[in-house]
Amino acid sequence: MTTLEAAKLQGFLQTKLNPNLTVQCRNRPDECAEIHIGDECMGVVAKIIDEGETSYAFEITILDIDLDGIE
Image (cartoon, rainbow, N blue to C red; front, side, top):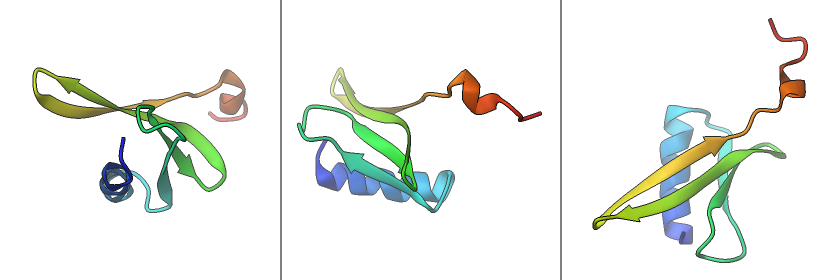
């Protein structure tokens, strides 16, 4: 994923989800990028190219301990 793609994704996700969200590329360009809100990594977004079409998959991981105390 390029820095330009990450910037476009960040703008889209800030509009749709949270204005404080950032997209940070990993060291290797063939890897996915990390989605952060503040210092917390919320998940990753991967670039998928299939039959000439490009899409992006956002995967968020929620630990069971993160749900403690939430009703």
